[in-house]
Image: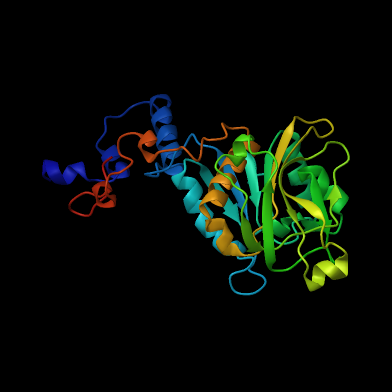
Length: 311
């Protein structure tokens, strides 16, 4: 056996040639090896970043609308590139899945519908100070008062309390808030809600409003001409828990609006804020912060002969 061939032997084979040692001496090395196998280094990932869970759902509505699976796919990449540690699914996260999570981002229709087990997991998460970010109709559910306790405001499923696709003219009411840095008054083609149920224990902090336009559904629901919060923050302390934060962006009916430069940066700041990290942490993250090795080509992680990597 040549020295070069020996170099690429798998770890298990190399151990066969190691000198005999006591079990007590071997155990730390085995534990360390097992830990590395369970949590491999992922080139380009900031392992110390904000832990984000993306709560998606199955696709609903027409093409280009409410594309929850695409959001999980797109934003798992965006957030990773901006220094976050990301997990997610198309189901309500379990208590175990939320164990190390700083903030849940919900873009899923009718997130207010929860089983008792799902609600218990969310309650425990919020009580320990976990943050929530809500996009569009994740605000909807059977008990808006209950869901408003988590995020400051919610709407009731089954009521006509929406505009459908129309102009949403933003009025930025707190341009000094750090989440709104770079945001300007603008108009999106999207959807607004009205007839909201607001939390009683603490008030929302409104960042932007819009005047409800005249559409068949807004006429039917009595919303035409109302000025309604569209973007807000919410801070509260659940009974027996730690202070918790939520950030809400009411739009997202038109999925392409998530690709708007101002909206993307606003969401990145809102996610960091809700997770109690520096508000610009994700927006200003540079991949160079990962240090040496972050930009090595993928093939450099494989030995020239195609065997097991030795690093």
